[in-house]
Length: 196
Image 1 (tube, rainbow, N blue to C red):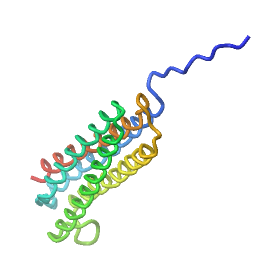
Image 2: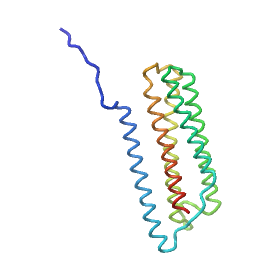
Image 3: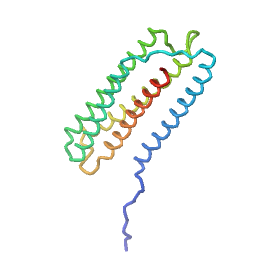
């Protein structure tokens, strides 16, 4: 007599767990760097060697781009939930393009900083500038990871790999992308407060 096989029930699906585990690791990483920033600033301000500088205005536009991209990725999730994969794919594609614009905007910001002699490393460097490049640079690489995630989901969706009710990949990609947007807003506000 064959034994009936019951479907596995998870408290949290392993794929979602992996996404959240990665997010927690990133939070700890950036928490450590921002804590180091605060300690270094306290020491160097007392010694009158902390460099204060204006953040590039393009950071404001970059923030707006990421906020809009959160809307487009969430729209993709909603459309996938309705099995409207043509619109879901469009939402992913728009999110990807906005993510690329964000990356380009960050490069422009770094060039503006370098023009104002805020550079990373070297004899003329200051701790505040180094921290800015580490914070924005590591976020930049996480955005690339998010773009790869979006691209993989988009390619699979274009090949018809998803059906209604099986759209966890869209949800996971959106969760990670929303997190990257929130992380950038946190970093931007943190830098605004600490560089004024």
